[in-house]
Length: 314
Image (cartoon, rainbow, N blue to C red; front, side, top):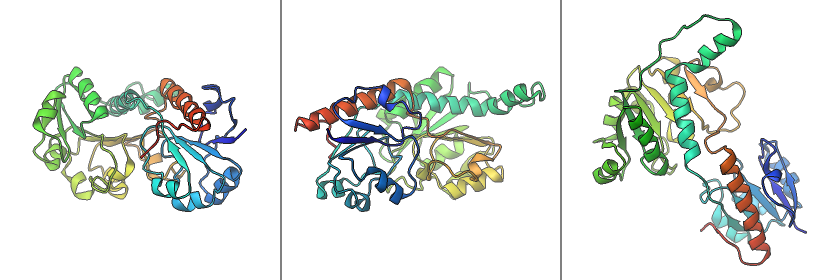
């Protein structure tokens, strides 16, 4: 039987959510930040299953894993996998389905947590602190600005309308027809969206065009009462500029689920700034999504063993 490693299984649930009996499967709960330690753990494995983009598979890593034959990633897109290097080393790369509703739900959890100050108020309840110390921000009648109006962004827009918000959206190729179909107004520019929104939520794919899309200049356009929420990819927003804006109170706060280095270092500003509500990349972490990931990962493995790979990443 081939050996299969399941990486970054933080909750230790992977082996219980699917039937791995066709392989000798081992689950690793701790993240391997050091490549030498990662190579040592994987050296004798022919199959590796990775969770989203938690562990990058670079050309260097493929070169150091000569036994690797199959790499399975959750989702059908993974920017952290060098597909050209995989092909060069004879490694088949397959993916799985991934639901878009969990990140939508987490986006709204962050928005509500920020605007109603749930963390400090709940903390005060537990610690015997003051009974009411904050004043919540109303959503009804406010403007929700969406950077990106794809599968996730359009669902976030639906919820915003249910709250009675004015929804405006922008991306480089978004048309007025598509925006209207999703129940949003098309902003004339990124700058107009940022300056006119009470809440800005990021729902773009990370690419060379979107990396650093929101930087110091863009953050300066936002209202001092506005909130930024990012459940997409950290690098779309300049992280140093965001820390500076939050530290100086130039925006009211940020809800963050994605970070350029994960797990987020213990001393990072996002862990201690009082106007940040941060979660450890939980956007896609839900029971139904995980069942889909690991059951389809096993299907990918079985198809590969039958010499008929499915869901291959191009």
